[in-house]
Image (cartoon, rainbow, N blue to C red):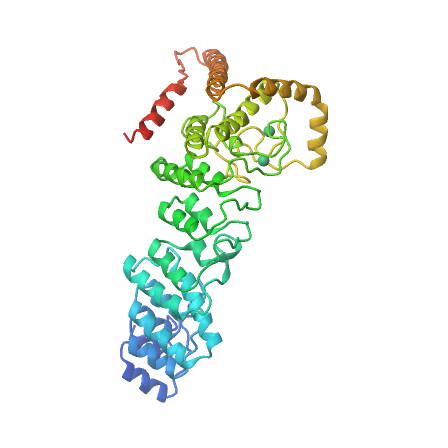
Length: 459
Ligand SMILES: [Zn+2]
Ligand SMILES: [Zn+2]
């Protein structure tokens, strides 16, 4: 490297100037500045000496460069990071705090606040991996104290959402408390998808933070832009990672216990949900597809859900939820076309994405919906008669009715599978005279019921 001739501008092949290489020694940096070195010189990737010093924990060089007028807002080319980002990402907490104090001394309040906000947003991000929880928490609390208004909102480019606030991305209770201590109160401020902070703690289940949001006045009946309350998001967790299911069930209990409206609905108008889809519309009441990968929680979880509604909100509400699912089953028995947002499959959180087995669902326009409902009016009358006959039945009767209808569905599904399997066998025998027998496995619903009973018993 030493043998390489230096270009005329005094940089090496990486674009580093002497000042980049001197940050380990503040005295040399000072001499180079006096000799006329460019304080804001960048290497081939747009890194300044200030960024080098921040990344390598050279505190004296950082303070000197700032005092001598280095530009603290310069961004490197790949990720647009500024020098403070490097201090945080590399885990140099003391350097970060000293640099912030220096910035406060050198810049106007308005400009200093811009550094404060940027740092707070970055501190909630997962890439800050080099800090222990406590250290990051202490840093976060200090920066919160500097912040004039911690209720600010910002754009999250990773998620493509506007209007996020710090609570949307908070990582633990300690930091949530620091935010509230600093004056945070925007628990009911929705992002551009209509979601509150509490939605994330349902999606990535966090019992403490979910409770924290409830305790601080979150409106549990707030609806996102799809017209769904947080309860729908909690229920979606039941088709997620199995290890998350105990936490999801605990959060479901908190949600039901919070007095959330069990009958909240979106604006669908389908024979299965004439006053909008409710939580009964979340579940997949079918047997098609895989037992383990489903787009929405399976019907087994519906039974658990009804039990919890009964426990927290009483028998009438549990009956209403059961009637919702029975209505869906009877809609299918009449072979009525679904015009709801889930087309009878169960509302999924994977809307707009091709799920494992589901087709992409797009909302029908009001005209098409009205035409279909009109064409099938006779069937819908039949459905209404079915529902009227169920209306006065007891909760226990309705539960039995639900299970017996599901059993019938299972029998039909088994027959379809057996026929399909026989057809494939015949085809493969024709194609190859060798013995290639195919076996179709069925998993009985009773097996899954046993699983739930075990989870409830904490086994
Ligand atoms: Zn429907
Ligand atoms: Zn709907």
